[in-house]
Length: 477
Image (cartoon, rainbow, N blue to C red; front, side, top):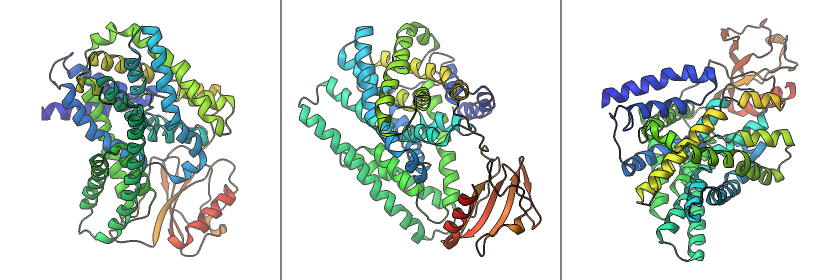
């Protein structure tokens, strides 16, 4: 089993070269590998829904924590209101419309239909971040979709658990249901904020002997935020996300290394999650339920998602082209498949049907929407000329609190700094341009080095001068 898992991870890693080239989310290949080695394939991996749910829950904690950790406060300023509306009200609208139409189109029980609608209501942060990483889509629109995808999972989880309890008859009073829902949200957010505020203080004061223990500490904090919220009846996933968000936007020692560790560990969790979930379904099941799956996919892509987007973006200044792209950017992924294990784990009738249908819908979304993002953005005139993410990175690692930071600056098209020598640029005192990345090559900066279009500058700057430096480049941008 250990050898097999290692082989699966290697195959999943190598397969990303193909998925990046084709523009297909990696989850498609990962799910396919899971299906190949699962009970419906070679039958090497065998898990029951309850065990799968327990493992998936742990993996999901780290995925959501990293989603918050990677969400920058500056992006929230750009698209907070519509993105937050999509992540909360939008999820409810999507779930209700999808569930209602499933009820009438397929003749399923209304509560059961609403449960399916809730499970497939959220978009996938991992797939979207990966697809957007090397694309030059308009920043505001990309930020809206990314923030929504990073923060909408908790609401989908809450709704799914809500309808499961309702179907089981454990919650008979509407007032009690609503009160419980509000309690979960408020407690989850408050615990996340509390942990997120305390964690940077701990990092700055604990003075650990080796850097490796800081990685242990961040994992412990993410699990603690989830556990303490669940212990008092709150939503642990919300707590993990908000804790990650506040920690990721705070200043503390060893932060850059922790960022790369959290990103890498989250990627491992995503890959493992998709391999695990793929092993629960047989390829033949996709063929058996393809009609129901197509109907639900069409409802989701062309009715429920657009209605939710057009309602929730009323508070933002988006034109028709931008709204249409946000509609198409709602790619499904890990969380719906994880939630699809909940009904079977709760011993609900037709729990197996739910999992297979949701699996088909996620696969359809990934195969149809993922590869066409660039095409749709181009047709809607939403591609920009900005530079793509550099293949190089530099970091300043310190086990003590530092008064200096290494920041990354991009020289985009039209910047007045282009063709100017470094000696001609008036940068703040005690600031040093440490390296320049140009055409995927590192250039050693000298006084007569000229800035060129699409250069990436790594600048070592004292904390007291960061705002002055940012203002300088914003002035030239």
